[in-house]
Amino acid sequence: MAILKFTHRPIPVITELRPMYKICQALLILEITAHGSKCSLIKLHLMNWAIKAQNRVETMRVAANLGQITLPVWGFDPALSIALNLAYSDNLVEPTKTGFKTTSKGKELVKKIMSDGTVMVEEKAALISIGKKITEDMVKTVSKEWE
Image (cartoon, rainbow, N blue to C red; front, top):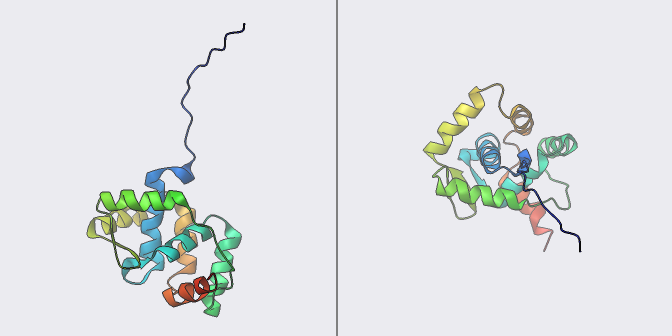
């Protein structure tokens, strides 16, 4: 009978799944695209989905300019939900009735991210290009169509 021998080697985790990366993404979304640094969980997932690809960012820019989101559905990322739980336990965000808002500790981290020109460059540029024009009402309207 043959004997199988396995050598355990560490496997790197892709950036998209690293908790600190997702926490920073969520904080940037709250700071750059949300009014008062707070937004619904659905909007957080929408913006998280949008910044994963340039064509999605462009779709959100068009929606922001039109004042209407025309997407039938978007993806919900379990890694974002985990990151939000970790951010809450680290006092970076706090829950609201419909979503989350940034705490003062979270705002300090966002300031550091924004001031560093070498960190999360693509994410910052994408979110800044969308801005605060995607409102909670727009997100709520399109999500009602799911029912």
